[in-house]
Image (cartoon, rainbow, N blue to C red; front, side, top):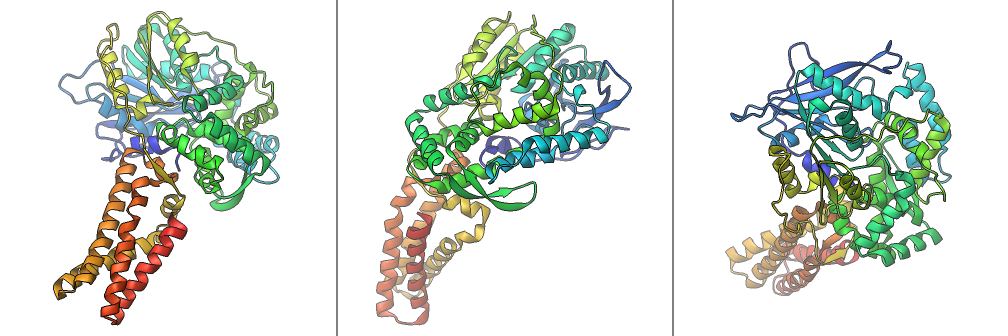
Amino acid sequence: MIIRVVLALALAVPPVGTSRGVGLPPCAVDLPPNTTCGFLEVPERRDAPERKINVGYAVRTSTAKDRKPDPVVYMSGGPASASLQLIGFLSQMFPDRDVVTVEQRGSRYSEPALGCPETAEALLGQLRQPPADLAAAAGRCRARLREEGVDLRGYNTKEIAADVVALREQLGYESWNLFGVSYSTRVMMDVAAADPKGVRSVVLDSYLPESVNWYDDAARNLADTVAALGMKDAFDAATARLNARPAQVTATDPILGKTFSARVSGDDLAAIMAEALHEADVAAVAPAMVGALAKGHDELLQPLADAVGGGLVSHEFGLYHAVQCQDEVPFNTFTPKSRLFTINGDKAVCDAWQLPKAKPVNATTKAPVYMLGGQYDPTTPTRTSRPAAEALPGARFEEFPRASHAVFLSSACARRKIVEFLAAPAGNTASPCLDDTSRQVGDLHVTAAPYQISKSPWLAAPFVLFALVSLIQLIAGALKGRALTAFGGLAGVAFAGLVGQSVHALAGRNETALAVGVPGAAVGYTWIAAASAVLTAAALLRDRRWPQGAAAAIGAGFLVWWFIWFL
C-alpha cells in the first residue's frame, strides 16, 4: 500500500517485548521496555453516566538520569486512528520523558471498539458497479451497535477530551505536554482549555481549527496542493480522461480478502489522491504518477485502488462517523455537491444516523503552543492553520517545505524542533531546517512492474534466473579460460548489480516511488544486458554444448521479458 508508507516506516522500530503492570491487561501490541498498558474506565456519556466503557492507554517510563517530571501525552488523529503502536517511536523522540499514548474511546485498543465493516465495505463499494448503498450499510451498522448497547452520542470530541483530563488525574501527573496530530489537535486544544493547570505546553501537528468547515474546504485544499506540486494541467487531463472513460482495475478488498474489478473515474482518482497526498512520499512522486496517468498509464491506478482498501481497515469506522456526524458534518453546507466519493459517503452515513449536532467550543489556551504545518498538506493546509496560530496567544507556527500531513512522522527536523520546544516552551526554536530533498526521486521510468512484483515476487523470476546464470557463466568461463563466456557473464552480473543498486537506492529515499516506476538509470543499463546476450550468443557459436545454449536462451528470454513486460 502506498498511502501508509511513512507510517509503516515509523512503526518499523523493532519491538523488544510486551510489558504489563500488576493487575493491568496485557498490551495489545509489542511495546518497548518499561511500558505498561491499562484501561481508564469512564462513562460512555457523562450526562448519563450509568454505562461504563474502557479507554486504552500505554505509559513508557523513562529511565534517563535526567528524566523530566512532565511527560508527553500523545493521541493519533483520524478520527479513530490507533495510538498505542507509536509509543516506541515517540520514546525515541523523548528519551528523557515519560511517554503516554492514549486511545480515543471506541478505537481499536479501547473497549468497545466501534468497528463498522458494513460502512467500510460500502465505501470501497463506491468503486464497484453499481455503487454500494452507503445509507443502507450505515443503518445496518448502527442497528448492530445499538443491539450491543452502544450509544453513539457518547463518542465525540468533547467526551474524548474529557477522557484525557481524567487520565492525567488517574496517573497522578501534576502536568504534562499535549501532543496532537490532525483531528486530535482539536482534542488537545479542548484538553488545554478544560485543564489549564495540568498543561505545561501544547504541540499541534497539522492543526485543524474548529472554525474551519473541512468538507466545504476539501475541493479547494486539493486544488491548492495539486497546484503547489506543479501538476495542475496533468491532473486536469487525467481526471477528464478518466471521467470520459473510466478504467477497470483489479484491486484488493482487504475486508473480504478477495480481488474485485474496480471502476475508477476521474472523480474517483481525485478522491483517492486527496487521501494519498497526506504522505510526503506520495507528494514527492505525485507529479510523475499523475503525468503518466494523463498519458494513459492506467496500470498505475492499481496501487491507488489497493490503498483505498488499506485505508478502510486502519480506522474503526463506527467511531469515525460518530465523531464526524456530531462535530464536523453538521457545520458544512455540502454545496455544491462534492466530486469526492469519500465526502459524499460521510454525508450519506450522517444523514442515515441523524446524530445530534455538537455545541461549538472555540477552545483557547494560555499555555505555550507550537504548531507545525506541511507545505503540501491537502487536509489541514497552512492556509487555515497559520491564521489560527496567529490568533492564539502564545502560539508560534512553522511551515515545513516538501512535507505533507502529520509532519513529525516524515521530518527528522520537525521532530528535533518539537524536542527543542518542549525543552523550553517559552523560548524560541530558532534553529533552521535545511530543505529536505531526501524523498525526491529524480528521473523515473514509468512502469507498474515493481509494484506487481511486490505483490507477487515470483514475477521477478526471469531477472533472478538471468543474474544467477550470468554468475555461473562468469565463474565457469574464468576457470576454463573461455573469454566470451566469462565476459558475457560479467556483463550480466554487472547489469543485475547496477539495476539492483539503483532500485535499492530509490527505495531507500522513497519506497513509494516503486509504485510508479524505476530510476531512469536502470533503463540506461539495458545495453549492458544486451551486450551480455550478444557475448553469450557468440560463445554459443564456438561452443555448441547445451549449457551454453541454455545460457543463450535464458539471456534472449530475459531481454524479451525486460522490454515487453518490465519496461
